[in-house]
Length: 247
Image (cartoon, rainbow, N blue to C red; front, side, top):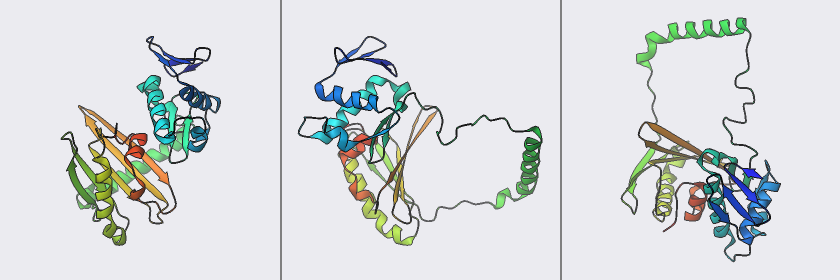
C-alpha cells in the first residue's frame, strides 16, 4: 500500500521509500502506522495509539514514531499526516494542496456578477485612494521580546493580548514559553507569535521563518478550556514542530 513517497510491506513489516531506503518497523511502530492507515481521514486519539505501544514512556515513543513516519513520507507529502491539536493524529488519503474549508475555489461565476464586483472594487479604490495617507495601523497591545537559543540563534517572541487584563499576564506567560524553548536543541523558526482568545478557549500560535526569498508560516490552533501557555512542554513543542529536538 502506497503512502506518499513510500510503500508499506505488511509481510515483512517494512516501510520502503521510492529511493530504495527501508525502514524496518518494530512491533510498536507497525501497530501505530497500521492503525493510522486503517483509519485514514479520521482522527485517531493519542490514548488509543498509546494502547498499541509497549514502551513504558508511551508519549515520547509515539512522538518518535510519528517523527520517523513523517520523515519517510517525505517533505512533499508531509501534509498527509496532520496533528489535530491535543486530540490525536489523522492520516489523509492524499496531500492537501488547499484549505478543505473551500471545496470549489475555481468555481466559475457569471460574467454579470463578475462585472458588478469589478465596478464596486473600482469605485472603492477611487474613494479610498485620496485617503490612503490617512490610514494608520497600530498594535497598541503587542508585547515582544527576544532571546538567544543554546546554539546562538536569535528568536523573537510576540504576543497579542486581547485586552489590558491579558497584557498584565503576558510577561510571565512569555517567560515560561522562553524557558521551554531553551530546552530545545534547535528552534527552526525566527519569530513565534501567539494569542489567547478573550474567553480563554483557544490558543493560536503562528510560526515564521525566512530562507532566501522564501517565507514560510505555520499555524497551530489549540482548543482547550482555560487555554494558557503554561501547559507547553519541550516534548509538546517537538510534537507540534516548533522545535526539532529536546536537549
